[in-house]
Each structure stands twice: as C-alpha cells, then as structure tokens.
Image 1 (tube, rainbow, N blue to C red):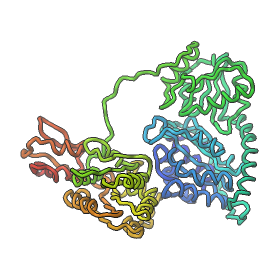
Image 2: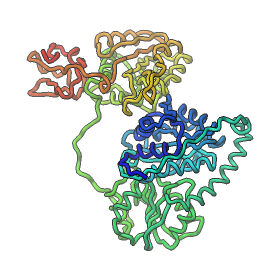
Image 3: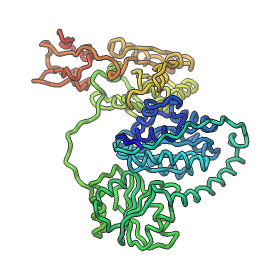
Image 4: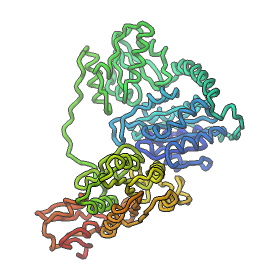
Length: 595
C-alpha cells in the first residue's frame, strides 16, 4: 500500500480506478467536478472518460456500458441528480450488470448551489443503497465496496460526499489496483432489458426483498460502528461524525453511533446502540434522515429512548455544521440542557459580494442589452452560470433564475401572459447544450415571441473551464467534433440569428435593438472568450481628461474600476484590457497604457 495526500474528490477518483472502473461519465458541477477530472488525468489508458452533455445523458451512457458488463461511475452535484432522475428511477427497476456508482455531491450551506437538498432522501425514494463518507479516506474505501454491492444486487449505488469531504484533504493508504476486468458484452434479453409493467412489477418485489437483507449486511459494515459508554448517546453520519469526534476529544463517557450507510438503514445496530439509553442527540447534514430512522425504530421496538435533533430544535435545520457547532451542541446535550442551543455568533466579515471578473465579456453583453432597452418594458430571464452574477448592481440584469435551461422557457411563460414587454432569456454556451435546446424547440413550435441571448465564452467557466460540445475538445483533451450553435439554431427554425462580439459596444447595442424590434424567436450569440482562458490585453488607464462623472464605475461595476480623489482609476493588476470602459467614457479619458 502507498500513502498519498489527496483531496476527497481525488480519493474518490483513485478509488474508482483501483476498483477497476472502465467508463466514467458526468457533468461538471461544484463540489463534484474534480472526480472526473482526476480520472481523466490518472487514466491508465483503458477507461473511457467523458463530459456528457448533461447528467441524464451521462447516466444513460453509463447504463449502456453497465448492461455490457463494464464497471461504470457517473459524477454530478445534487441538483444534477434531478436531471438524471428520469432514467435513474427506471434503471433501479431494470437493474444493471457491471457495477454502477453514482457520485452525487451534496452542498450544505449551500456554498455554490441553488438548493440544500439531501441526496439521502432520493436514495430512499428510489430504493437505492447509499454510502455517506465522513472523510476522504473513507470515501476512497467506500468506492470499492459500493461497486461490490452494486454487482451483488444488480443495482446502482449512490456515493454521497458533501462539500467538506469533496474538497478536504488527507493522507491515505491506497490499495493495489484490481486487475483489468474483461467486459463480457451485451447479452440480448428483452425480458430483462426492456422495461414493461410486468417486468417492473416483478423487479419491484425483488428490490423490496433484498433491501432488508442489505440492511442486515450493513450492520456488519466497518462504515457503521459503535463506541463509548454511558446513558446518553450521539448518532452522527458523514462529515458531522468527524466534527463530533474532534469535539469530544478524549471523552468516552458517551455512546456514539456512526452511520456510513443511511439506506438501507442498519437497524439492528441502531437498536443495539439505543438499548438502555435515555436520550440520543443526532448530528447530520442536511436533513434529519438518521434522526427519523432512529425515531421509527424506537416506536417499532418500544424503546423509551428520547431522540433529539433537528425536529426538537437541538440541532440546526439548515446550513453546514462545524467542529465548533458540534462542540456546543454536544456539551449542551451532555450537561442535560433541554433548550435549543444557540449557535456560535462569529464576528462579522467584510462584505465581499460576488461579481463578474474584470474583463468578463458577459458584463459587456448585459450592458449592451441594458442600454438598448432603456425606456422600454423588458424582462430579463437568467440562468445558471457565471452570468447569474448579472443580477448584481449596477447591471441588475437578471430578473429570474430557477435552474439550468429554465430561463429559455420561463421567458416564454412570461411572454404568454405579458405580451406587451420584450422578453429576453440569457443562457451560456455550455448550458445551451446541456438543457437549453429543448426550450428553443418549444419556443419555435409554440410560436413564442422572445429574444434568446447566448453568452458564448467558449468554456464551462463556472465549474472550472471544462470543455463542452461547442469547444471541439473532449474531457481527455482530444480533438472532438465541434457543434455549431448557429447551425443548431438555424436547423430549429429560429427566425433571426446574429453573432456579435459584445466588446464592440456600438455593434452589440445595434444588434439588440434590431432583435427587439422584430417578432418571433430571435437569437443573439454574444461570442467572446472567457477572460480566464484568453490572454489578457494590455491594461488600460485613466488619463487627465477624466471629468469625474463616474459613469464607468456607476454603470459597469467592473472590479478593476475604482474611485480615487473623486475621479475614476484603474487597478492595473486586475484590468484585462477589454476596453469596455473606454468605449463608454463620454470624456474619452480611458485608453491603453500610452494614454
């Protein structure tokens, strides 16, 4: 065995490689992204790795490979599971052949997500086994076990790391890689692989039969265990367990139950834990999943143990936990406090709102639309990506944001009931391929009146600059077929398509005015590369002609623009030389370094 210092996501990736994974597909989303990237980087050469167009496609690609007997992994964040839920629910009933592990990273906080949804609920709803790692070391070990469970019961298995496990680092011992597995190939059998009501009914019964058996096996799993003594107990799962153990230190006067497989729940181990206990405090992120299971077991086995947690107000119902919070809650519990424990009140931090990067072409796109629509009634439907930050002042150009691809269709619903406004939908190039095309089809087919603005910066910027179908590169860095956005739109029947560099402010405004003045589904593709992947130009500076009107600062909100002695100035270390501020300066006081 070799000792290696790894991030949690890297540990999961190596765990999959060492377990003999043969195909890894996924869609980028923080905090899961580095799993697939690490597999691509460490690929011994025989693993097919791809960034699929979205999570649904990724799961279906993996399902096909699994049908043929390959071990497969699919990666996504928690909201990505919503996209993949359609095939997943049916796949549970159809079953798989080669082991399938879904890495679904939850995001307590949320730190970089729309929701704090708890994937453990989804596992229970879908009747899937779920592993909940408490550390990078455990995440590594769980991957191999998850593949074994998957193949034993012919079911997908979820591995549910949370943000602090995904991005935490640890030194761990890696195991020797399993020898390469032959792929037997797809065995035609329509009675097994074609889902019909009769098959679903029969397989549903099999699922209900093996889940209790698997729950019994999980009672013997090293990922679930008991420790400590006393009349009070604390149950914890995931990263909350690590927080708890650090908070308790050398204190063994409390019984502790660790849950690493919350579904199917290790019931007999939990009953053993609660027997003879007066009270149990439950610490977990995000929802009260373990808490509910313990409460049900108390009723089923007539235990008099009192379960305290989120429902009783003894643990926070939202947000992340921490060692400090775990210590506060555990100390209050062990000293007999019945009241809900106030959480530590940290000192206020400096306000640092998220903003578009200096030189970001999205700022120029939003500004062009805003200037073109001054004095007109318009609604701006946003989407998920860096460009969601278009909602910030002074741009204030994102009126709605729901989920990936929804901006295109939300705009259609708004237009249907408020036809006197001009309805814009903003979407990024990666999101266009992931979930935007369907909305465009819907708009053309149902004859909606809207302007779609595709913000094409040639990358998936928000999650770390992964390639997508429009970049001409694959996850392995190979040359791939580039899908042309304009040709796709033309094929869909869009009535007007304009492609403009948003940094050409005058031309961009003219394009918006033209699109706003004609009916039908019309599209503006604002194409300019992300400042993080393009080579920055020479920084601009403000010269003596500045009259202190502050238009550049007030209207653009670029972080490189600052106010000094009542006049605008440019921080050269931030300026990317995009030149947008120079194009809107009424005094012509901004130019290159020679200005």
